[in-house]
Image 1: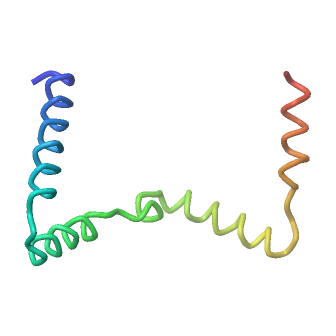
Image 2: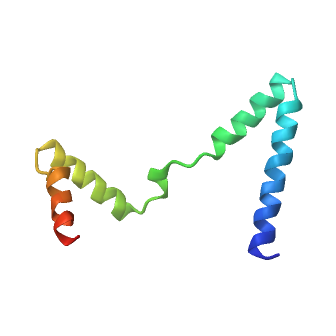
Image 3: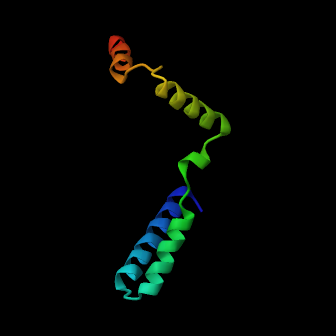
Length: 82
């Protein structure tokens, strides 16, 4: 199955599920589906490598100590190149 076929299949499945969702009046079914979606959600933090997490933690600690460069200052550096 090529990429376009897979995308179309996924989109077709989504539309079918949306139709079924709109038709149902069963609260228990909706609650179950909502729970499935909640369980499937992945926290972006958990998808990062340990090194990326450590860099963010370091940056936050530096910011808490006032050791940072204001966004405006950084953006001025990029404006010079354009």
